[in-house]
Image: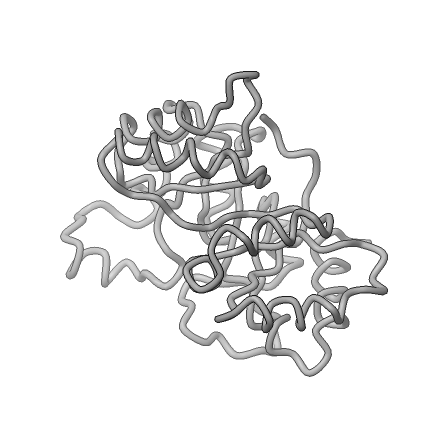
Length: 238
């Protein structure tokens, strides 16, 4: 399973189906139908029906639930998620190679097809100071991310979630074909919010991001469509 091209993914972090669909109504006249991320907030509020509805409307879906549990539980959960026909799902790389292999096994359908499967390395809100003092990880954040990415590759996954600042590091460790999906995207003239390791869309492209995940800079913008189109233009160099 390989990604076909680079793209911008809008993080639909809404608390209800109505809020999400109202937001997406703004994009009815957009030529490029956005790739969407459904995370925990919306999925827990609306359940699998929001996924089915958005798939009916023709959207690609990255289901961002970050599974992290014992291998057997993750395998069974992935088997359920594979039936939703999403395009991308993820786990936490910290769950070990064994867990990631189990996730891949559960996700793969009887006919051999499956969504793209990626693993979260370190959240973009995590600083190296927090990693050392709170998580008791003595390695540097770059060494940790490189090792987690190599573990994901060993498990057979398609790529990882990392900050855009580490996309080149992951490519160097795992090869150019190994996908990098990068949140932590902000316009250069925008607020950082609660993100720590961030950059702008154009720089993310230069470093090596394959997909950028953009939430508040689009969803909270005065003109979300214009913000999305700016992201697309900057990231894809159109």
